[in-house]
Image (cartoon, rainbow, N blue to C red; front, side):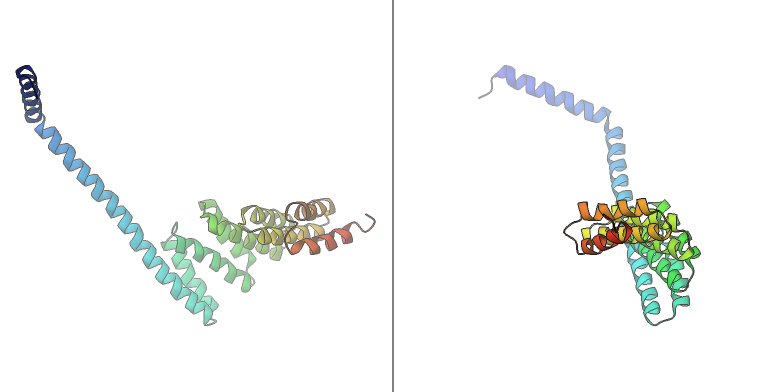
Length: 217
């Protein structure tokens, strides 16, 4: 039960609030409109991104179908369009990886290097890092740049999500290092597989290669 004094105080507070609302009505209305506008803008941006991803995925699927038909030249052209038009999207990044694969299949390692380096410089999603670096290693190897190939393969190993992929990329790095004559680096890479990825199937191959490089140990 409230007392007359409490009732008077509550009425005074209510009156003050009402007066404040009257004085600041325009500010409140403007603020409310701004909040609605911001929410609408956020929704629009999100919806636009979603639509862009849908279109990109559709065009990527079309390019894949062309590649599957065997028309690699047309597939490469279609994938280039996806990469250019939808840079930053998941489909755009996947298109860049597929385009690099086609470049390698067509014996164009230099073009593959350009595509992959552009993708990596843009900062792709983690899901594409290992593939991009692995293909970059293959492109450099095909082009005869063994040192760059080894670096790319090691980067692929660091980015790979699964141990068997890490081990495979490290085996690739050890192979090109051995061919390049950098036996010490090749040995170190193989030892990394044996020590850090002992549960993978590639460990046996790493041990065999290590013996071939150091037969007297």
